Picture 1 (cartoon, helix red, strand yellow):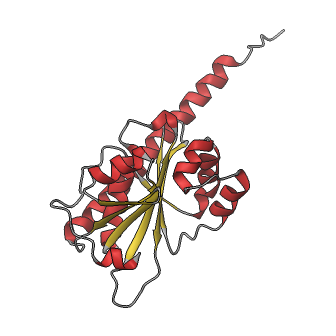
Picture 2 (cartoon, one colour):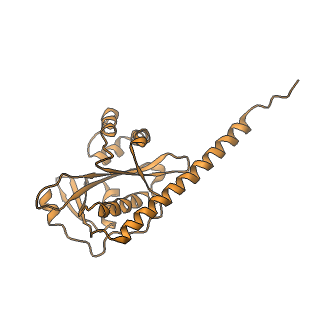
Length: 219
């Protein structure tokens, strides 16, 4: 696999779509939200995300073993502060003479599909990869994962198929002052968006409670 990474070619135009969906970097405190998100995936969605049938206990082990100090995890939240889309950027072991690579995996719940969430998560991961000196962004999935293949091809990734699997590669240019500012701005925007949604949710919850409460008149 590393030989393939070394031979990857840059796309004619590096992937740099403007983010239209707020994406936050997640930390260990989001582990419960990540678990809840993945458990909501149906059997077929789990197979496409992890490449095999994935029961609940396997997902729990996966979430419990996430290392937020080594890898990067990103998420997109809906108006109810539910994690609607989640991406894991796993840094691959360094090999002497080979480019530093990271593997990208993503899942989006049905209610969030077709809204550009997967695109935004990949764009966010690409910028973060550049800023952390990743040279190759790598995706491994089932060849019949049409959504992932569409996302990879849209990003300009080189795709190879073999034995029912697919590998996609994107050679990343080095970081610069623009990518550093872009990532910081994206994170601030995502935090601001989350704060607004949080305040609106609290307000809506308070009104729902108030309007749903039976009024007791004094005797």
